[in-house]
Structure formats: C-alpha cells, structure tokens
Length: 73
Length: 383
Ligand SMILES: Cc1ncc(COP(=O)(O)O)c(C=O)c1O
Image 1 (cartoon, chains in turn brown, purple):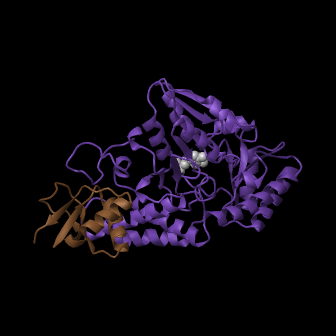
Image 2: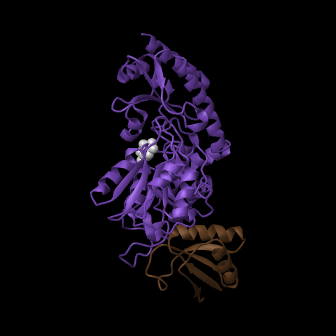
Image 3: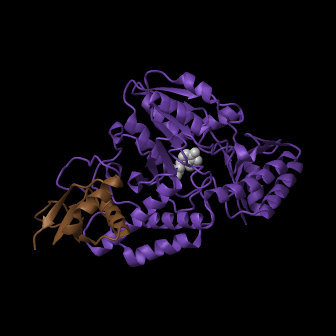
C-alpha cells in the first residue's frame, strides 16, 4: 500500500525526496494523481507503513507539505 | 592578456561551469517545476542542487530559503520595493551602488525617507553613527557588504546586531563579496542577502538571488513579480511560501546548472576562505606597488585585510581614459575606469565626478600579472 505526499511545489518534492532517501525510506516522484489535486506537477509516493516516519522527518527539517493521501490499490 | 575587471564580472570561469551548462541543455533540457515527467523532475533536482550549494556557502540549513533572480539588481529591487511602504524610513550608507540607490530614490516620490549614513573618505563606516540614524519609522536597513569602487568592507555583523535590537530587517548587498569574503547569514545577523552569480561565485551572467534568514517573516515582503510558478495552479493568487512567492516565470535553469557547478568547484578548491587569502595577497602586492609609484593616489583603506580585491587609484596628470587605452593597447590589460555605477561611493572618496581607475583581481590572477600591471602604471605615470 502506498501513500502520496502532495507538495507545495516541485522544489519541495525534490527536497522531500532527498530527505527521505537519506533516511533510507522508499520514495518515488510520481505525477500528481488527478483525482487528488487540480494541479500539475509531481507528488512524492511513499509506503503507507512509513508514513509516520516520513512526517517526523519532514517536521524535523522544517519542510511543509499540503497533505498526505492514501492511494488505494 | 591580463584581466583585472573581476569586480564587473569574473573571468575566466571554471571549465566545469560550461560542461554543466552544456550537459543540461543536451541531456536534461526540461522546465523545472512545470511538469510531472522524469526530465522536469531532473531539472528540478539541478535547481535544488543549486539552492543547496548556495545555502551551504551562506550558512543556511534549509535550501528552500534561497530564491533565484536574474541578478543582484533584481534581488535588491525585490527586497527594497517589497518591504517599504508610504511613510516609511530607510537607513543606508554613503557607499552604495546604484542598484540600491536608484530604487530608493524612486521611492522618495512615495514619501519614503532615506538616511544615508556618511562613511569616512576611505569608505569605512562607524556602526554607532548607524544606530543614531534609526527612527521609529525605520522599516529597512540596507548596506553594501563591500564597496565595488574601493573594496572597503562594511561592519556587517555590527550593523546587523543593531538592526536585530530594533527588530528592523537588514538587507545586505553582497554583489562584491559572495564568493570572495566568507559570509554566514546567521552569525552575521543578516536578514536578507542579495547576491549575483557572475562575479565572485564564478557562475554565468543572468544568475543571482536572495537568501532569507531562517527567522525572516516573508509576510513582510511583497513579491516584485507575480505569475506562473508551476505550483497552486488552481488559484489566481500568488503562492505565499518560499521559494515560489518570489520566483514567477521560467528561471534561467541553464545558468543555475552552471552556477552550481562553479560553486562546487570553489568548495572543492578549498572554499571562499582560500580565495580570500589568494586575493588578499594580490591586493596587498598591488596596493603596496601602487603606493610606491610617484604621482599615484590609491583610495580606500589601503589595507588588504579590510577590503576586497577592488583597488581604485588615479595617476596625477593622466586622464583615466588615456590610461585605460594605454593599458589596453600596450599591455592587453583590462580594467574599468570612471564612476562604476556608484556616484555615492565616489562622492564619499572625493573622486566624484571624475572617478578612478579600478584594478580588480580574481582567483585566476597571479602575482606576475600584478607586477606586469604595476610596470604598466609606472610607465604611464612617468610619461
Ligand atoms: C555592489 C554592487 N551591487 C550590485 C551590483 C549589481 O549586480 P548585477 O549587475 O549582477 O545585478 C553590482 C555589480 O554590478 C555591485 O558591484
């Protein structure tokens, strides 16, 4: 199961990707699922199991995001 | 050939700069921040890499606090016009470049009052006098970090401490010092640092930016431009977060690829401190040599530890344009003469309206070149 972090901008996406990779979490940049946002651009896909850890890391590194949504598959 | 015009723009550039730019155009190509595909993400990684290396050089942890602009002028205009409102007061110095003074003069028409704190004839500033200029209406303090005319370095840390005490944002014009003098935004008490990429940072023209201190509240500053950012495309209002608030329009991503490569090159070669050492050595040799030539007047502190590599002088009885022509024709020596976009600086030094001859060395110059230039000056002065 995956979750997806919706970000403020692609700059934030790259920052989040770097921070999570450094913490050895699974991360992939994906196009924003259209049903989640009207915006173009990228979102950050993570493992649903690692969501809490991700939130911790982003908050520790003063990195805001819009929201984390679950991707039902 | 001797290039002594590094204060206008640095030359040569590290080879890696051009390689990175060429690689970007050939292999990456896409517009960062605009689309979700792999190439666009890669372009954003390149831009983020540039933010990282800039943040690191200026002592910031968070690369999101770096905003890119086309040059220092755009960064200064963004901050000055974005912060000041009708009825406000701003404190600056009598050594500023026109990139600060022209936006300020234009604001005078909107009832914004300017106090220019007078510097000594060698360009130095007494921070105590600065404090006396602050009023309850002061909403911005802006100073040059080092003069582009004579290199004199301002007591930025002291001014920043005063600004901090009064809770007034402090904007520093680091056009001459980014890449040539170590800067730590937090330790130096700076709120906003404007820099240009094509001088001391050894990057291409068309790059520059504004670095935001961790605690600077961006609600205090309007953007200069508003437009497409690739983010929040569902709304017609400008994003209110960094860096997008101040980065509308497609950026010079090719230039930023080059800037990042040049700055990494600086880091690999030992960092800004190493460049500072090299330039101070050349500057000292130059100042000492010029001082020993009959008829030559050197301006500024004449102390390489108190200035950058920009050295201004005049030769008695010789017009600057004749001197420059002679340097060019006989010695293939490039320098800049005149007022250097700084009538304020030249008034302070007592060299307005005639100006000075400026020799500005850089990381690639050598002491042999300094000696050859001194020989050229000796020759011209003796004729
Ligand atoms: C002190 C100073 N401020 C601002 C600028 C403007 O830089 P740019 O031309 O890159 O905008 C310069 C250089 O021209 C400068 O020397």
